[in-house]
Length: 208
Ligand SMILES: N[C@@H](CCC(=O)N[C@@H](CS)C(=O)NCC(=O)O)C(=O)O
Image (tube, rainbow, N blue to C red; front, side, top):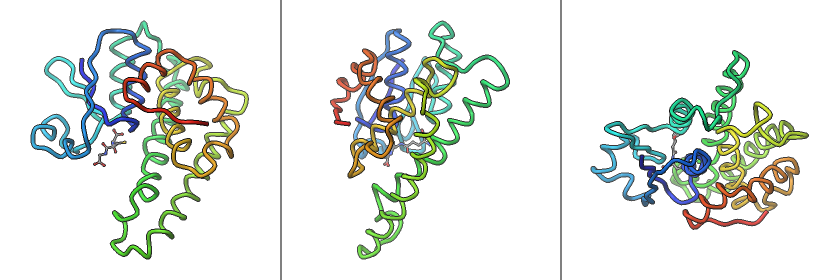
């Protein structure tokens, strides 16, 4: 099994999950340029990470890879509670993190993709920042009094929320200072051996 990742990108979630599973795997760093090469586009036509090659198949899309790993390694117990409510919670957080929060960063990191005129970029970034603050506020209130996002134990969603929280810690002027519950959650995971290994492997570090 081989993970293709960009250091510190959303693929970090899969890297952490593979560490938590504890089975042998390879992880190969790619550059943004390489994700657009003909060779890589055969792996993932969307030209993005994460991509996970397993046997003769390649799995893409973060939430789909997470579900694949939950099913492939049931003993790692990284899935939701096996109830209707548990599956709802998993889908809810995949939607919130993958559908709301992740795309919320695009205008913040790359305003030039939204307007060619440089004079518009500051306003685009400010609007994106306000939206991200709102979304992190929702996640922060959810983490009040919780050590894990769902199920009262470690699941794939912890790795996913950790990954996007690391982006806030690295990119926001006040890091995670406005989000005390998220900050505690991230601080706890920074002590987790699997998280430590995945971050070190990717050469990523950040302060809270
Ligand atoms: N919907 C995809 C999004 C993947 C995605 O946007 N990956 C980013 C890194 S976080 C990427 O590879 N970007 C390449 C680029 O922007 O050129 C998923 O959830 O896996």
